[in-house]
Length: 411
Figure 1 (cartoon, rainbow, N blue to C red):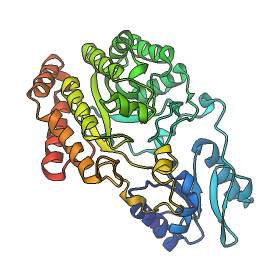
Figure 2 (figure 1 turned 45 degrees about the vertical axis):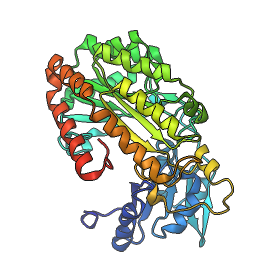
Figure 3 (figure 1 turned 180 degrees about the vertical axis):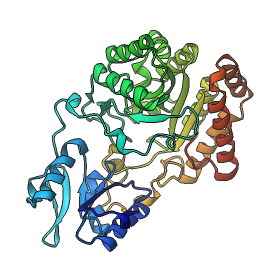
């Protein structure tokens, strides 16, 4: 579609595993409008921006982080012909070399950001996550960052910045009134870090009878039984926990900052409140052995969340895990295309990459082949028939993923 419009700059997002495919956008743009600046956004590779620009000559500018701050300044500078050296948070080409400007500072007040210009979208009918149930659907960010120090995470030890409950509620009301939104997924890393804010949001949604169902991500120690009841009453129908392992030793090695007991309670309380639970686990973190894998598989049997994503440890650039893995390497690999969470590129002292991938598949079988899991989820649908469409589509996707894709696809 680029050939049908005229533009001076093109901004697009790219990821490590889709790097070559995403960069076709930059190549196409250059073939159509060679003078238009190509600007790429990717937080995960921000610490290897030199490698990114060396690998892809058609990318002019790498916008590393703090997009809501940097983007307006960058566009104004390009429009005015200003020197890009004054724009923080970017790496760019200059005089046949690559320049890396200092990091940008986050915005001081996230409530000062304007609401997204939703009327530029063609509508919401084509948007959904995993299954096309609960439409019209959208995603929202109500905060950024995570102060916790998990060694595998690209946003670890970043300052948590939030929008106020009032600001979020105003956007929800707008979406309901203008687009009839039924489902919202809050994409924050740690949605419940501020208990008072979550309580206000959930209570207002319930009192205003907005009729919006929502999902969120958080940590297991940032919920309690009473909060989950409030969240359910306010429309929360699903919560994603990063549990990572059923072995306390592995959690400690990964500096997770939570316990197996907290994970057990978080899932138990959510189930009791009627909130579906989606949990992520990682095999191959430092110290993983056959015994710790068995601990995790046993924990999964006892936990039986509504759904789960089982991954292998991936050493993303900028993480502590990356530094551990490549501490003795002068030139770490730049083939980011291999950094899939279903394909192991590293092992542990006790387990090979192949054995970790086998552990991952064993975890899926442990959960989804358990008759108790089926009984519990069928029981949930009986108690909540409004979830039948979503549940049936989810199950069909899991079956397809297992039989034909070896659980490589997200679900």
